[in-house]
Image (tube, rainbow, N blue to C red; front, top):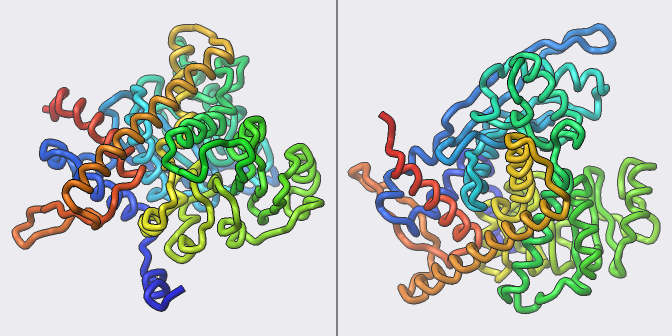
Length: 460
């Protein structure tokens, strides 16, 4: 790596608030003036709630936990987004993720706005009883901040169907006499959950990748048969995606979890990997594989790299070493703006989070519809709708990317476009590098959102 690259590495801005604004700024040049005047509206969250609450632990002690819920935008419909339990949850992180949910819902064309929530806690150090107490107290503190037609939570990092059941029950106790099933999605099947919801993000990701490689935008990768796939993050999303890719003929050559990764060029037996993780708590040490550090895993040989862990995993300091032909964002925000630019210049396509992992919110929408209509759909119906929606979204993004790329070539522009402040406090939009898939996806999402905003008008 050159000295110039090292200098830029040290100065990379990984602040989530700044990343969100940078990406919004980048896409604005591709949109019209009527959309640009809504920049501040699009950038700012509509509502942020922070709470602190006490919980009695099983040992008799009392601990205070901090929780957050942010609604970024409700122009298209109720807020929608997961609740995560993680020690590093912050208001800035939740705001960033709520913004992504706004773009995601607009891109895949479902009538929701973006929201997100979380509690700063470590579920690995908590008993099920303590997690239940935290959940119930958090939801009671939120009060009417959530609701079936205002803001609808769902599972996220270290939360699951059981957590959603506690959320539903708590809300239902506080709001008796109504059909409260639609207040939360990702519930167990026997209390209003949808078939296919648990697998939705991983399966939707598979449908998106399958469709994308059929477009020939990755000339050396035109089929999943025999493709080498490395998956960072072997939780719910990563493991379900792994199975789907394996069934399509791909070789799962690498998997990783919070302890590290393993690699085998001939392919990893997924059943053995699950058994090893259940026994040892990690995939590291799986017989017949090479163990890798987190850093080495992301940079290891493969054709498709699926990032299903945390944000900011591919940055300026390691983007030059990525060997995959296609990077897929199963997690939210795993590739930084600086890394986006490097990968784009190297000809490595990035299937962005607001497209690749949208399957979860899609089937959450299906669950919400079923709850409101008192219906139950068969798994085949859910998967057919999921596949159709994901394929349509991929087609729309690819078509928009081709259009924008053609326009850039016609204009002779090869520089990254950015928002620049002028001395008279006005803004001007200048052109900068070749458009990437993320920008194309954001252009579609923001145009849809702004069209409805303009039609509704700015109240009052």
